[in-house]
Length: 200
Length: 121
Image (cartoon, rainbow over all chains, first blue to last red; front, top):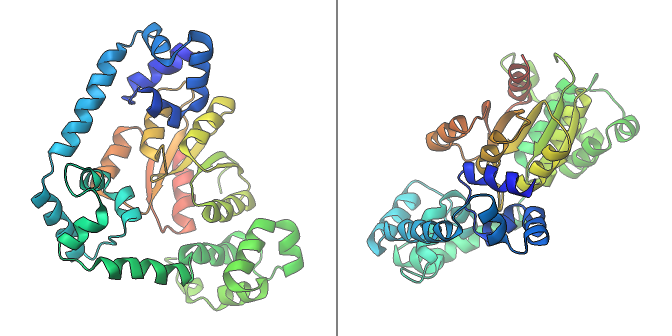
């Protein structure tokens, strides 16, 4: 089972270094160590050349970083700023991992904030935007989904709060969180102009 | 709704998972909700599902990586990828890795319903 799973990950192109697989599937690495003594040995039994895995991963990591340069990073940050992209580090880390990883490597800027400043973008305003967003109402789309559910999914939008709480506790709870009360959510749904729009 | 489905819902946004689970259950589906790609793979090892509804961006193991691994498993449910970060590149990758559909967030419930119908047609 362990050997089969390692082979499947290998076939899927997964980085098979112990740390990577441990993050992905800690049960698999634990089982491998339990049955084979070490992850490396389990991988070897599965027919994997583990030294090659290590070398290839290191090469890939270096290649990823070296395709960048200080100028290329700054140019890309300015491009993203011009596009109106959200430049908070948490967003860039998820959305542009290669850019983020290169920027924060010691080879280049070592920090995302430093690179953004260097690119001439006001980093303080980006951080300020984050603080502002923390206090702002969230979950706009989830509110929309709740309204749609009340109008189109429930057998009738006229369902009472008591009944909604009993039959659909999670939807009820989120509606109350989003709109203040079930009654308010239902009222918003009933006056929502989308209900007259056949295209939905 | 065509028929009741067994759905594995994977998204790290817990509030969204709660809302979608509730909606899908009201529609008559059986939903298992998990919050990471790893948990999804574990769930797939334990049970079988008609459809996996997975977010693209998740910490540690994202939807694409999960999709790639699911592709090599014995059980191959139809996978619908959901994302707020749609790019032609991720869309094409998702298709290459075997995604059945690609839903851009925010989507309408009607779009989700149609995607589920197509997945089980």
